[in-house]
Image (cartoon, rainbow, N blue to C red):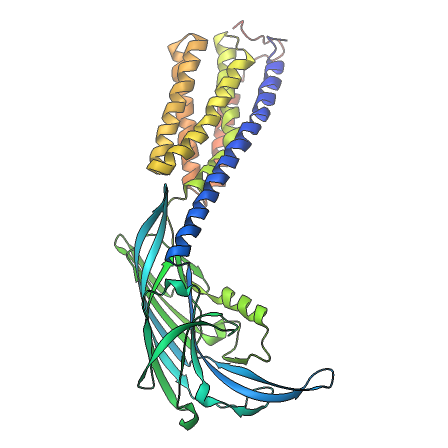
Length: 440
């Protein structure tokens, strides 16, 4: 049995499957390191400012009403009517930098966001339940900010020619619950249909992403930043965008029919959870993408590990056949463990040097180790050199698969087909029934 090619193939298969155990451990290490990075991001976000979503402004007008509930009882209460602006323009500049927690780097930004637009003085004939009294004197302007702790300095809003202070607070506007607010007087004396301009500037700190809610009949957003790797997300994508070595700029133009919520609603009739979900679904903006997510790349690499171990075993097996040298299963085990260690080296080195350099170092030292081992066990430089060439090709192929995200399946399928074709060609004249390993 020790010279049986079939028995050797069965043993190799069993060893390859048993190596799934250390590979699962490696994936656990990758997941644990990725979790630590997320903890570092959360730590920085809590002190600097979280990923920010800017919403509004929204005009909130209190009103009192009486109604009969479903049980026939008379009810009376105070509610709010919410109205969105007619048009909204947001011009933002995100000055980026990188913060560190231990070995982990997190992109953050200092945003200067200029907001302007107009409201139309609304009527109250659409409000339900029908109001007994509308308190226009207590109307407030609400601006939604996900994490108000990221607001760097106090702001004011210019409303109909008046300068009003914005103060922090929490409120339930449906679309958002935290941000800034100010009382706007004079609406009671303003004629219906009057155009009311507003403008304000926010200095906003945030982490990793900045998004906007479309809260006007027409929302125009222009963003620029020196960050060279933007990830545009949400619907719609920018109408125009430009990404260069010096940063990016992008412009969005969103109409009201492109969002899932209306231009006005009341606290009496709104479904808070549904409105919050619709707001989240309609947000659009940009994320500060780090060019190479080393943990994602390492996890993808581990998924190919079994295939590459099998192909390396195949190279050693062919030398057993062609070189009349009988190997012990322990030799295959050591080679398999060396290939598993490659992934640990890749993760640990890339945390300090970057993925590309870590991949080069890890693949070179692993190839040198296995090729040197092959030279020793086979007793020849030619065998060690061929193993080095084969492993260099395999690691080069793996790097190509990691880079070709959209075409990885196609490239992988073609590569496996070519390897299989080569093996079939090399073994096309072998008589497997009479083949005995170690006899040439």
